[in-house]
Image (cartoon, rainbow, N blue to C red; front, side, top):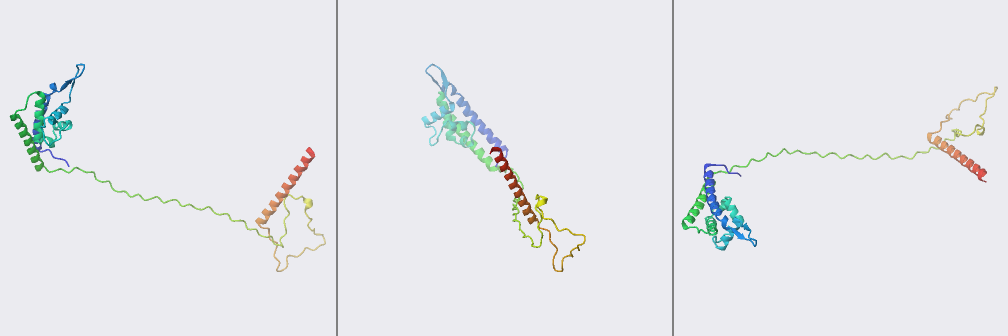
Length: 244
């Protein structure tokens, strides 16, 4: 919440500035007397705010109040809760007079007290006549709903099925293994000139079927095993003849 600048607030601010200026002028007169001698003759100026706070506590000028250098600094900055306290304002003015060697007269003390009460009255009147202005707020952004991404489904690899071995039909003639010499193959019966060609299959007897793929693969595997055994035997014989 912010406060609008109105004529009443301007009048209250001017009264605060006038009171703070009077206190600052009294504190400026203490600068020449707020130093202390060091062993070699060098002078280091003491902090004015700390010195004023020490004097207020030592002489008990503000009974019931806790005064330190931060409190004095906030008073010189025009803090509203402090400038409207006549006890603190008069105590700081008296401490400045004690440090400067000029005791604050009762007339000046009454004038400072009246100025503090006037500031408090002006601030209260300005607060009562001023409506707080709401602080503009940011318009919330529209809420965006994020749909979750579907998780990829894992497809199981197809399982390999064992090949089904089909037994050869007893009526199917076996093929000659590959790689076998022609001399090892039995001679097929030849037709003579006067022979009569054999008739076709009788009724009810099926034609010979071609061997399946599994049977052909087994026969090829056996042929390769036979050739590998023959090559191994040949190597053994050559090695025996060479090194024997």
